[in-house]
Length: 327
Ligand SMILES: CC(C)C[C@H](NC(=O)C[C@H](O)[C@H](CC1CCCCC1)NC(=O)CC[C@H](O)[C@H](Cc1ccccc1)NC(=O)OC(C)(C)C)C(=O)O
Image (cartoon, rainbow, N blue to C red; front, side, top):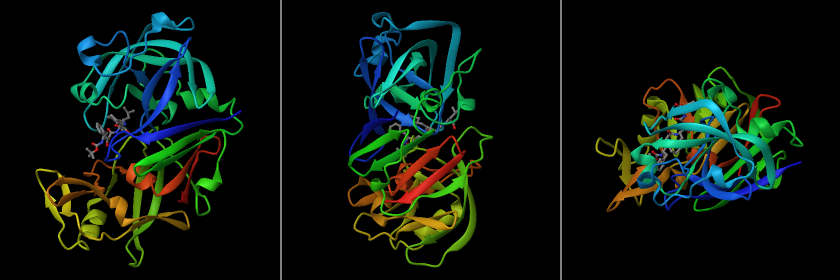
C-alpha cells in the first residue's frame, strides 16, 4: 500500500509547505504543515479559543464517529522559533494521500501562541521526525508515518518541495522520476529524535570543496538552510553587496546580485543548491534576504526547505538512513 499527497508553498516566499489531511468520520479536511523536525500531530480544534482559531480550519472531535478521547493525556511543545502550543489528545482516523491510519493520536490545541494565531496558512502540524520526540504525557504517541510504516509497501517517505510550485509527499514508494540524479544514502543518528546526518564538505559556486563536518537534520518545517558561521561567512564573502543586517538578523544583499550556488556533500555525492534559491525574499526596496543563514551555534545545523527544494529527499525508517537526489 502507498500514499501520495500534493504540497504547496504557504505564501510567495515559500515560508512553509502545506498539505491537506483528512481527519475523522466523516472526513474533516485541514491544511497542515508537514514537519520532519518534530514529532507531534496537532491541530486547531473546537477546543481552541475561538479568538485564536479565527481564520483557521478546525477539527471537531465530537462530530467524528471514530474519535476517542485519550483520558489523562496532554501535550505541550515549544519550537525553535519560540512558538508554542499545548492541549489534550484524541485518537481518530487520519488519511494522507489516500492512505488511512486508524487510531492515530490527534493532539487538540487548547492553547496556541501568537505566531500560530497569525499564521492562517496552517491549521496545525504533522510531525514526521522520530517517535522519541513526541511530547504527549504520560504515554508518548507515535507519528502518523510510524503507525503507517508497517502497512506501507516500504517503510519510507519522500519529500519533493518546489519553489512557488506544487510538490509531493509520497509514502511507501520512491518515485525516482522526480529526481535528475541518483539517490545517495547516508546513515542517520537517531539519538536526538531527528533525521540527523553528517555532511563532510561543502563548496561555493564552482569553487573547490572544503572539508568541514556538518552535523545536521533534514527539516521540512524549517524554511531556511542554517549552517555554521564559518560556512555562511565564507559564502557571503563571495557576494559583493552582502552585509550582516542586525535588524533583519541575517545576511542581506542587493536583489540584483547573481548569487553563487552552494553544494554540500552527501556521502560520496554532492547536492547543489542553485543561487536562485538562496536569493530568498525581498526585505525592502532593492534589498533581499539570504536563504542560507547561521545556525546560531545551536550545536546542530538545519537543512531546511531551501536545501530540500534542490533535491528529492528519502526518509527511510526501515534502514535508518536518509537519501538525497539532485532535482
Ligand atoms: C519539540 C521538539 C521535539 C522539536 C522542535 N523542532 C523544531 O523546532 C524544528 C521544527 O521544524 C519547527 C517547525 C515550525 C514551528 C513553527 C510553525 C511552522 C513549523 N521549525 C522551526 O521552529 C523553525 C522556524 C521556521 O523556520 C519558521 C516557520 C514559519 C514560517 C512562516 C511563519 C511562521 C513560521 N520560518 C521562518 O522563521 O522563516 C523566516 C526566517 C524566513 C521568517 C525542536 O527542535 O525543539
